[in-house]
Image (cartoon, rainbow, N blue to C red; front, side, top):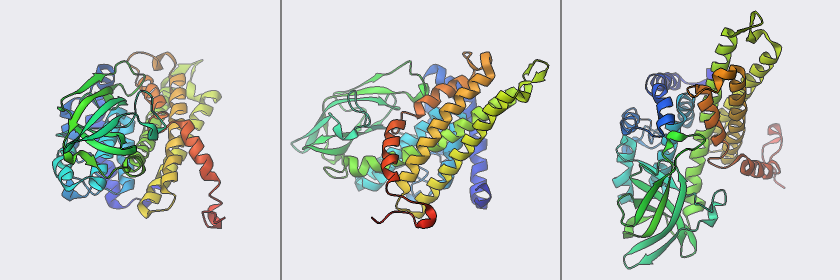
Length: 387
């Protein structure tokens, strides 16, 4: 598959890798231990064109093709999963505004988000609502020439530092999206500390206590929140997460291989022991298979295939479960050196578990993919069933 990259894609991939190694990797441990991401890094991402890169250049993007976007997400996932998560969240909001927002909303927010001057948060999950997104309890009501929002959002990435939130709520009994700015009276943010993984993603709970919104706050139209706005954004999030898991798995494989070559036990490198070889073989096979599924998902999205969403679901499911297994094996191979407070594979192991939860749990993906299996047949037979 790599041989099919165009010269431009190869050049972009090389630039992604260089920036990730020189700028992202050195700060990955600090982002985890300090549970924060510097705004200076956010602005660096904006200057490099990593934020909103899928958008047209006229809106601050780079018109990046989806395969190159995946390669970028892989390099972020390989070096700092918190950065990958930040870019994904920003892209989810920016793409939603570009596709469903009003001209005024696009004009006000797309440029600053892409430049790293404004941080955007995707506020869907609630204390009582996770996978069942249609059941959001936050409520928005019409009030004069504006709206009033009441409710709570929880586990929202970068909500602690966000300047604007894309909030999903019930409006007249219909799932609808709204933009809520950070300085809106009645809005409070409660940081969430001590997470298992993605500790640098500044998660928080956001409380809306009769927050009054201006008339131009609705994104899309009443009832479009889940079916259009959220679904489009979540597809981008899953695609980024899938590729990020490939990068995470590759980082674990690299670390485990280096250690197995250097670590001497019983007068020989442990890579010569068959059980270690078996673990490394499974790690190689899983990582490469995950990458191929991500490539296939990217190609399907580029071609506008009818099953592109399910291809992304499959890639995210397989890549996240693979990353979890590969990270666990990396910790096992490194032994005591894999569980210390400064062990990179320990951080990757914690982040890997989170990958099986965000953007849809593995179990939700299994349910959706199980239903999809009834609609497909062998590729050589023509793809989808007609009966």
